Length: 339
Image (cartoon, rainbow, N blue to C red; front, side, top):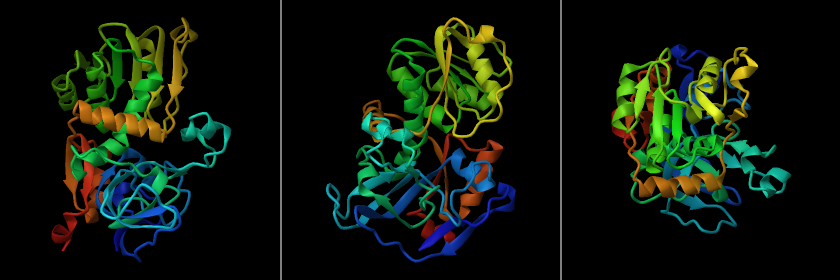
């Protein structure tokens, strides 16, 4: 099978992903073999490829927003059959027995494994996945539309929940990339007033088109006190800006797996029971809830398409801020374009 494999982290300009012809994997007990059709490209992939997120094993095939069709099932699999459509997201597995898993917090499991970090991901024609962590996808979304939902969509949804925003509340989104463009649609579905802070004029306009009450730049003051805020930019200074914008009792949720240093700030910004919370991964229940909501809204996904062999270019565009919405590898349609 063809795959884009990371052998050694390096700046994306050096094109560190190498196209490889690898043996097709076989599903083990409790696993599915998927013939992939699409895979989203995420900033976490970029951080892994460039070394900001330390690789857990090398070589590794990145990608954790994978969509495909079940080609085979391993021994002991229930609930899946060849021909079923499936999605594979960031959380690849959890122990199911620790205090976190037993209390519905499998996203915090100390033995958790992650797609494209611990086990090979979706930048390939085939992959294996634990059957109990694969996701059934709404029929209303095509494969290319579904891929961005599996990370940016679900983690955006969990970030909203962690922020404590209530229906009709005032919500701030700091940064407006792929995840935020999906989160705003959920927030608007809940009747929230949404205020967006982003450097890009184009993204400010996109935010307004998607229903934001106000959109401004990093130096602009949010016009009202916020009940909650979610930061999407991986810059620590954004956390302080968001904290300064939330009202008494408000929460800032940090949607980032890797974050630059948060600068020192006065305690007065945190006083009056303001809180800062990180968002760590998501649970299968988060994913199921979000996919149900996404189909009900229905959420609109925007993405730029790349063939599988252009995964480096997709990550480079993401790094440069030249992706409109999300970036998706069109694996099913890549054969002709890559020939």
